[in-house]
Image (tube, rainbow over all chains, first blue to last red; front, side, top):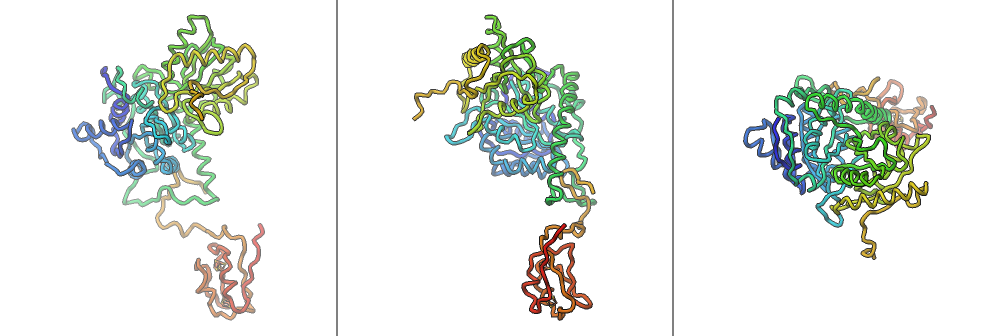
Length: 395
Length: 86
Ligand code: SF4
Ligand code: SF4
């Protein structure tokens, strides 16, 4: 292991390299371009023995990964926003064919209006695609989650693809100190990829991703759901094993000063760091606020959320995305998970930081202030609140 | 029968085992007495699901989709389309 000062994109690239993929196919897109750029250098310099395929679109990038992975090798790609959207139909094919591909996503807003800055709408739009989803708070997590994503995805009970999402600019282009494990350490954690079903052998021709008629299609989807359910246990196992080897413990939902909190913020991605600072300062003022950060969004950690939600009176769900016509994705899933609780906390949804709008501690003070009012009144009057929207600008 | 992981098919040329007759909602039934063995239906069937039988046209229900082309083309009203009732 060695300390290095690297940006989030490099963390993804180095993480991928340490996993020894045999094929990387990528099409550059802001703000994830540095990922394929860095990997192409590794390949050109002979540091990574792999084929780097330059393709003409993101749809081709993921298609090439699907094709390569189906021959029986580990693959990687990276993208963002419109690029991920262009991959959309192929994402379902990768998961349906049960190919444990891992991709790095720089979370970036979707057009229109065209915008290259951060929000989570791109990966949230793919939450039903049958991919495991991991969200990093910082560059260390970006690197670590790539290693763990492969290990989880390739588990024989799982065999599902996974995406590691990192916030545009806040992580992708920001340099941080990252503990980079050695190749030998990673090799001890992640064994070479041995496909159980998806591989090509000219001696033994097979078909992959064949036709599924009404007689079989539902069973295939059922088995994908079963794999998602099974992955919950595997994720815990892998996170634990990772901690044993690298001394960094991940949780599907990470708690921060949550145990005695009356107001609990639910967050994802890099905003969690800012929110933790805000929590610290509010705690100094005696406000009982805590935080629960979703590192894993798919499979949705419903059981863990229910456990965490037993004590707080208000859950303030902070979404950096909006499902237009309803609410934020985290809020929708969180409230549906809480529905089975006998006594559930009050829930309120805050939309924040769309299209790269900066997220400051002040935003969290405002969120907590609004949550305190809800706590005092004992009811939620406005379930959906937009933080920092300049209403005077709206025609 | 069990489904595979990732819709993998182990065996080449296995589509022959896959019976597509289940898509049918009407079944063509040949009246042996009316059939003249002109084999027009045999030529028209888009699924090649009709065989030349000894006494009359014989439908292969494993693959017949129930499109009704044979019944329409038969000049002798020897084929009747009957609803599939399970
Ligand atoms: S109904 Fe259609 S598919 Fe069936 S035997 Fe007649 S022509 Fe062929
Ligand atoms: S077209 Fe009619 S008469 Fe001719 S072979 Fe077919 S069923 Fe018999």
